[in-house]
Length: 401
Image (cartoon, rainbow, N blue to C red):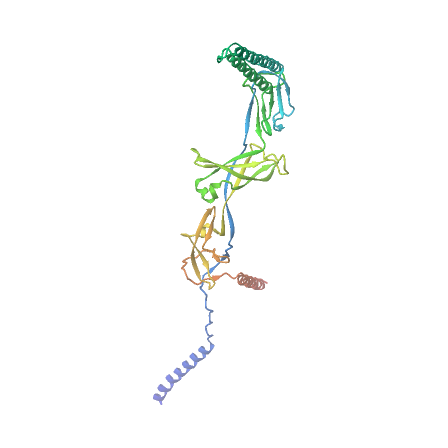
């Protein structure tokens, strides 16, 4: 009996343990199945826009007149007349009278020269007549050939010379009389006037200065490495000048007329000269461009038929990363036409609609699989997160109550 108990009791304990284990196993919840995590890198892209582009070169300069002239007196005398326009800032037309020097002495000199010429012409005619009489008398006296002296040819030549000298004196007197009138050499603006009514001037006295208003110039410095972006070294290129007039930004069209052809010793710049027609808008409706004004210039350069603008920081060793149609990373080689500040101008290598990867990747490899960021999905996740946080706040408030 005792032996049976020794056998039955362990078996019972074993069966009870097995039953307990089975019960505990049934009570245990199965492990939750976790969704598979997608580890594909997510990137942001921007679409490439390929369009025709005209390159521009920036410069600056001061507006100056193309022609400026110091007016000087060519004869001496007293100023007896001044034009009302002969003041600083006055606008005058070509050949307009600015000042008059007393012409009395020069009118008298002209009359005297004309009288001298009349006397010389009379003496010339008398000598010609005497020469003809001498020739006729010589023929009646002898049949031999007369000498030049007998025909009074030297006397005739002398009188002819006197007539020419008298003509020259008349021309000189007329020219001096004309010089008593100081006139504008071209359409101009008065820059300065150095004489007054009644003042005496001598030959070479500076009476004023005029600035031509037909054409203005701006010397534009251009770095040597920028000339490659200008067709024909920039000559005949169109220019847009930007400046301020009456407190407002204005623009004026101009054209590169010439290159100075040398490199400045100090700035190491080449200079292009832009010309502006009618800068003071005397014949047009545009705003005047005043002499001495500071302007910024945009010189139009060469044209690129298919150009794309790419941020400079995305270019590595002449390549950029794009996302192809199969969502794979691809590197493309670029033909860079120009570096322009924070961007580069690409002339070849990119097509319209290419997706440029603009986000950073830890270990980019050509051909790797990528995914685009889903803004809608991210928005939904954010909403779910906000809902969870709201529920948690409600439960905490209930427990506190």
